[in-house]
Length: 229
Image (cartoon, rainbow, N blue to C red):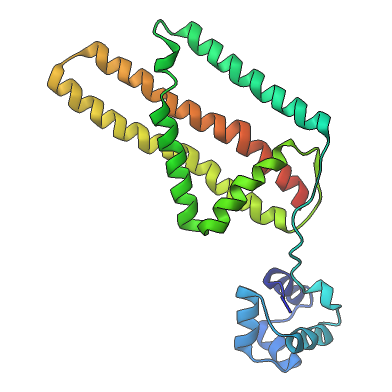
């Protein structure tokens, strides 16, 4: 039986029981109670002992693993996609008008590779392959019209909050590395125009970070937070 660590702790506190007292009344060891509240899990006998002691049903302690569900509507998906395309087109248009140089200089592919590479590696390091897969597959909920309340949305929210922060961390790290390179180049050549042009190009890293964080992740985090409350 998969006992929810969060639910067990919440029910224990609701009954004004310490871990020691709950262990004594249920006939379980204190170590078992501590492990259940930190890791979850447990056998059927443990679940029944806790339910009998706390006078609750098994469902009130079990961890449900049903996938997050969403209501999909074709009009919603199409409208969200069109909005994103219009926003991205508007950004490109503004960038083209604001610059005397070619638009290609702004669309620095290496900046996008650096940003996505950092996000991928940091997510893998903290959440593993399953976390990375969840982060990618969870993007589909951006086009959903409604998410159903479920505990799974809380886990996905924490994952996206971590990636959201890392978008700007990656932009900051990339900017520092680029600035150091520009300073070394300026010290060698003394070309002021090239230096300021390089600073101009570095801003594209922040633009990519803002697009991913604010246009993709922030709406997802908001929607998932609403579903988990």
